[in-house]
Length: 221
Image 1 (cartoon, rainbow, N blue to C red):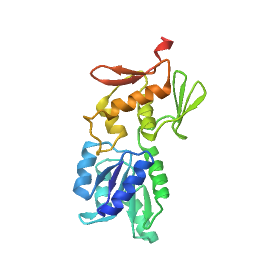
Image 2 (cartoon, helix red, strand yellow):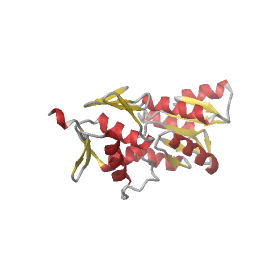
Image 3 (cartoon, rainbow, N blue to C red):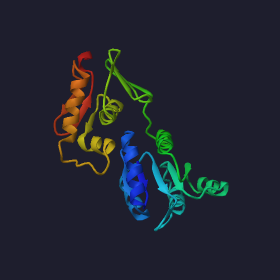
């Protein structure tokens, strides 16, 4: 997701809370940065502070809609009248949250908007004897509940949505980490090793040399 907020302290706190909830968050401080980010990345959701030094985010979102861009948008604002909320929706917003707000409510609203994005995973993914409940964020193998970190779950979910297909390393990094991650580090390799250990045997996560990784039940072939 993309968070557009010019207040550094608020942006840091909100981004940290969203990341703690398992979301990959890119940050922008103004509309030009947001425009660049939205040009290069297909986000599941964008959160805009309504009034930015570079302009009214509603003007920008309205232009996005005219250009056919459908990314779900939540406005954060101190403007709390009914007329303000109606205007926000009329100009392309999908949700509206008034400051001050409770962070858990923001996280819940963002999750709801992300589910509206075009590429929505089925509620339960199955690969071999592994069952991945995307709503409850639970994983079972042969009926046994397994414990994963939020990042491990995110990588496993991406692999499961593309079961039997090779998923590139860069795509996994982009989908499951935010822009603060270093793609050249071994962070993904370490996580894949942890996934394999926790999933146990027979192995389901396979390395595709020169490409990335594939989740498949090869014992059934």
